[in-house]
Image (cartoon, rainbow, N blue to C red; front, side, top):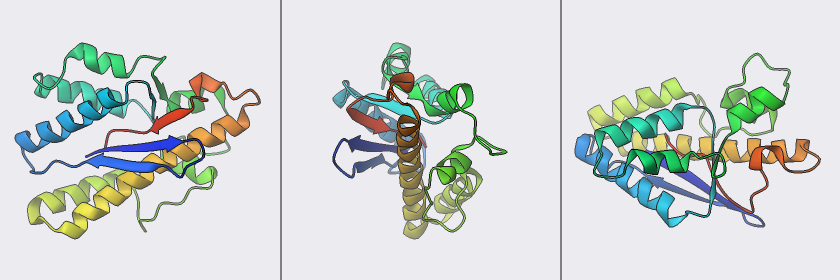
Length: 184
């Protein structure tokens, strides 16, 4: 699953996702190819994600599916002038009265609440395993909803960082067109 939150000034935003149509290598490749086309279609966007997971995941996907894109294409997405890891901004430039700087803790401190009663990365992996085994459409939707919440949470963290910064210039955080959080 690749989820994107498009947040343009003055609008509520739009969630776009690409879920593998089949739980196999071909399905993974199809979803990855769709996500890469999405990146290409929005080349002028500044991308935001939370932690190194997305960079690592996309590098791994490129290695498994080199016909989709090149290593250079992946590196281009993560160039500092095009992409900001919000975790790096949080950990290097802010101080929070929290025991964890994970997205769940930081986003909750910024006033965001997940819609799922038990949101966690570990749970989403279990939901996916259960979905792969059963094909239950309710589990598929739960995974998509969880991803949607994650990308919106990242947008809220980004907005909170802008509010904290008098100049609105913390690590390229004031881009007028934002696509916040990607990956799964």
